[in-house]
Image 1 (cartoon, rainbow, N blue to C red):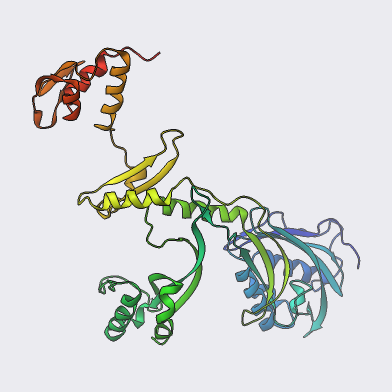
Image 2: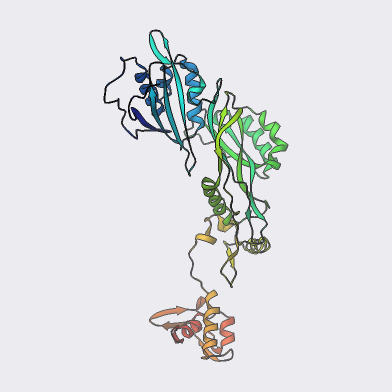
Length: 433
């Protein structure tokens, strides 16, 4: 095979959903080596079509447009929307050409190879002699390429080094909007209520624009919940069951605002730590071999400072409060978070235990009183003022409902959470340092 100059075509870059030309398509400076139907011309057009993810154009340059269209479409779909690729013609003549494919799946996951493509003549035109090996020389029959991430299945650990959360298979139950006729709604609602007590399908919204073939996600179920009803669900017209890997708490009863954050961190980490495979798959999706890939890198599992026992106690404490309540327990020695809990009324406002900004309130009276005692300015029996209001450094500080204790021992003012007493103690303390 004869070289036709330096990078005669390309590289042509491709990314799902967008055409990226990383270098202009050019011909060798010495001119085309043949007429409009030369091997170089065909190579240029074919590689250019690949670079634009133009399946129809690439397939039309082959002697089997239908077969080429099927394999190329499944390859582009199978390699994913976030994949970048560059294609470069390396050599060409009127019998064959060689082009290089450089795939970048992100996170340092790359794959490069060269493919020699035979040319043939059909209907008086030079065309690509199509087979799946045009995409990669190891493909056979109707095989296409498919990219598959290999999940890092290590658990998220608690403070004791035990599994707090781990990846598990869940099933997403979805239904076609056109299938939600009254009889199906009744049957489906009763069935899902077996897995999720109290589950109710939302009433239909006549004014909501919905495509007839749109799918509506109804619920995500753990395997132990879906298996008893899977067969019945599959018999309902328009139902789709999709198994996915999700990070779940080992104890399904555990609830905490930190769960969502841990899951998001774990999923982001997957992008960096997950392994990968590029596999050959046949038309029905069966994997026939692995062509490239890498295993998840060695490393440590995600470890948290959460203590499951304290988390349980914290949750039980806030659940007794009818008003919105949140609790964050810290290790006073090192500041580590031991438990984060909030009740259902608080959940309606989001993860306020982690995002809410609140003044420390009476909690800080402990700090103020301790500082005053350590300074020697007062002791527990010192008599202090506890008026209903007090002007402290130009700001009027009230007690709750302006209660007035008069002059009382410090321990009494502390026990009654007297704002005016603590405000005066605070401003009378010497500056730190």
